[in-house]
Length: 141
Image 1 (spheres, one colour):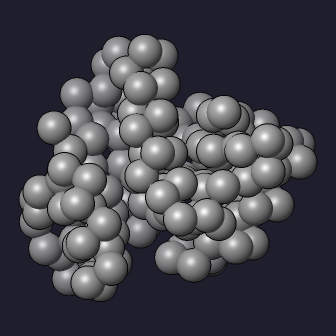
Image 2 (cartoon, one colour):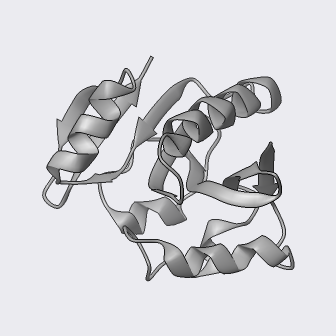
């Protein structure tokens, strides 16, 4: 089941303490009118978590996640508690966004420069869009 954190009072907001990619981003920057947290639940137990910012341009740095917009869904962190849950979560989050945010035209990531990130995104159908100073953007069709 897909759970969307849209409110800072949601008890699942505490899951961000487990973020291995961007632990310094506060909850208030992850949940607002242009950002959400998606949680995949299996029997009400978190299986995977991803954070998405809605922007007008592809971000190249973490600081650009603070801008707002309605054209680009930028997935900037993901972690999984069970094998295979991250892939399923990305697909379910994309379906939700397509149905509920029809202005979104691009699906990108702001990923760390790691082999694990590259393999994950390429395996899930993304291509490398651009390499930035500290990050890489992958784009999904």
